[in-house]
Amino acid sequence: SDARGQPVSITEVHPEQAGTPISLTLDSNIQQRTEQVLGAVGRVFNPKDATAIVMDPNSGSILAMANWPEVNPNDPGASPAGDLENRAVGFAYEPGSTFKAITVSGALQQGLVTPETPFDVPDQIQVADRTIHDDTEHPEETLTTSQVLAQSSNVGAIKIGMLEGASGFNGWVHRFGFGAPTGVELPGEERGAVLGLDRYSGSSMGNLPIGQGELVTPIQMASAYSAIANGGILRAPHIVGSVGGRAEPLPAGHRVISTATAAALRRMLQGVLAPGGTASEVSIPGYQLAGKTGTAQKVDPVTGQYSEHAYVASFIGFAPASDPKLLCAVIVDEPQAGSIYGGTVAAPAFGQIMSFALPYLGIPPG
Image (cartoon, rainbow, N blue to C red):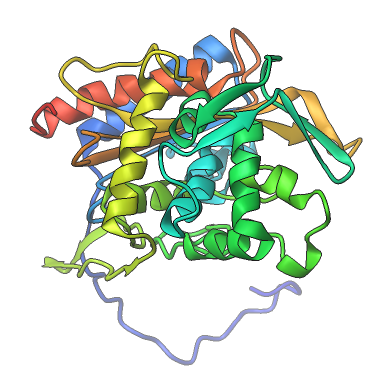
């Protein structure tokens, strides 16, 4: 009946047809382990929410995609509306220091720096009307490009970004796929928000190279790091394995950096998990890991300024570092207890997921 209670006449009847069977790329055991680890993150750090993605960086196949708090699919109405969102594709956030790998990749590819290029790094830098600090106060020191990544120096990353210039940096942001949907076969994918070059201000190159001032999604970051892991090819992630028993063709992808640049970045990102790096406490016996931590301030919606207590802690990495076969991204929104840092909140979760998935998939140590 319609709104007035009148019967609605159906003049055309189409017989029901069976749908085509679809098989996903998800691995149920890796999915279960990922959900367990996120549950532990929720209990320990009491965040607003969290998400994790496990991928084959070479094919773009998604092996696990989990969100916390969990939702009972048999009773979705029992959960708040926000918990029903797939944050892996729908959570738009400022990435913070995980974006420094994108900044450095552009400078490496353009030949502006090498892994050993030295930079004089004070603990703060003035860019137009903004003063940007490193995480901790320190005397002026000399850091190589590799050490800038390993120690996550804001000042060092800004100096590297300035070598690229606003136009060059903006070009790399777009080349790595930011500001556009990845094309993964899932509903609700956000495109993020990339600052147009015509909207750059005098201070933009003081915050953009360190992952502030632009919005990304977890799936975009996982895809960008997959390009570093697989030798320089940006390929759309995918979750549909086959339709009607016929395997779906892999997305073709396109080259964004050279194999040499990608290899150099993989070696540099190993330093993040080495002594002195921001995730030095995370290790898996027999496996060489590579990745990057992020601890990004969130904007307070009331004041419009960066919050002093709301952060996004993240870690994105892959293994084995020299020839990656598996990638994992963990993003934790507003951890409230224990710690706020990517190296202590998200990186250990990455380690717990990967320590199960690597041997489970038969990936040899290396």
